Amino acid sequence: MPMHLSPRQVQIFSLIVEGCGDKEIAQRLGMSARTVDSHLQRLYDRHGLHSRAAIVAKWILEGGVPETATTDLV
Image (cartoon, rainbow, N blue to C red; front, side):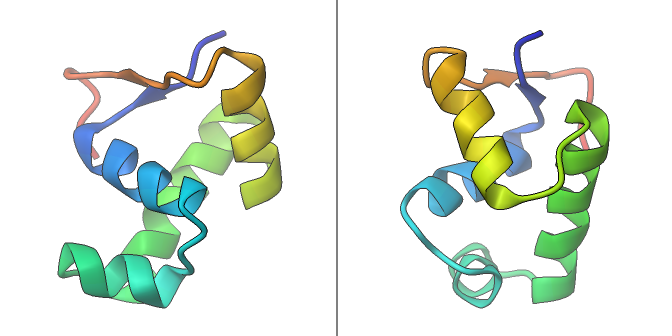
């Protein structure tokens, strides 16, 4: 099942792939680290994953292109 991400989750995910931590992601996107964590938790829950490594591995296995779900804004 392809990863369906909101536009904000795509931004967060892109920064994860660059190696950014929650604080850096939060700073770059103008939000709190807690909000970043909340977005990540939704991703983990939706895809049955438990870590950043698992999210990135899933992304790689699916060809490296998460789909943006325009109707599933978070």
